Length: 284
Length: 156
Figure 1 (cartoon, chains in turn blue, purple):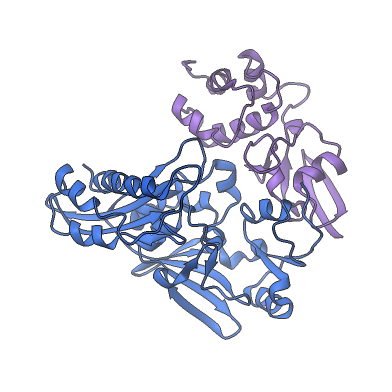
Figure 2 (cartoon, each protein chain N blue to C red):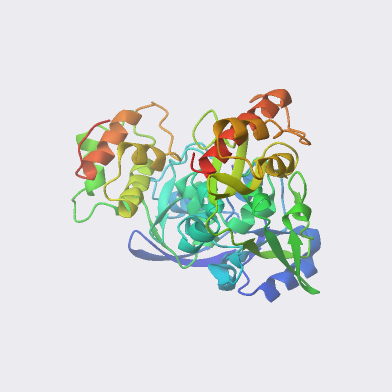
């Protein structure tokens, strides 16, 4: 399968890339690592006139410490994020989710920002980003703006990034010392999750002091399980207490029905996976 | 057309290519390196795996223009001076193949896996090869071959 013809340009600065987007509007499509876009182009589900490759913009790569947050450049590969010691220390939930994301070859090309901007509700990074309260740094003609995770994901494959804007980085507030676990349910290797749960918790003397939980593939966007988060505060990190809180995991969700399972099955799965994820995150 | 210059299996090459040309097409059709095969054509099966700047990638899921300036190694560049690469030798020794179609990708991924983790456990090998499918389901001998190449105990 071969994509339809397109023109190609690989700018070396964000300013240059923004000027191209301003000039070409929705005839242009950004390529990051291309691990989701290239299959789409090959199946001719999309046929942009111009492909703007961000792969030559060095400033979009790397992880840096910015005080109370880590700043992950949008073009940092999954592989580089997964091996970054700062991410492991301050945003362990991202590291845990990376262990299950696609396969090694895809992780070598795919990028952190590209996957989040693609906004597949079955993607593995949306739920951790929601749980950790990530902020999305978006550049446009008018300068830079930051959008919180709650407002970034708007719908299936739809984010707050405008046609003439670029996601340049993701800021992850540090969760140093928090336990983390990503529980993903699949039938076969490197499948998209039927449901997955991203949990990170801070414990104090055997009790859960704070909890943040994100849900993958339980609606048209990644979601927070806020009812479970609230119910966990002050609870002992025991099987019984966590199971009781996790029973609320599907509250407010709108999961899809497909060949992998109907919506009711996914709602049930969410409660089971939430219990497992929270217990593992709490080290139980 | 876009001008690209890169290194493939140690040789410098330069060509004008259509931006839509996939790296795997470039390797096979422009350079005649048909050792790298196209399996699923949907980036699932890993048969087209090559190394770009030392890391394994699926060459059906990368544009040739994205490889401009890169160092690419294919299955055809592994053997040196008529001597098979140790991982190739191990696949032969352990019969890590049936029909052989997935073998170029399996070997390229295994070489990268062993560079990163020279003594993988059986489980680490299976997880490390997650992105490579064998349509004959000959996985046991493939895992044995990687263990053999790593000089470890063959348990699978």
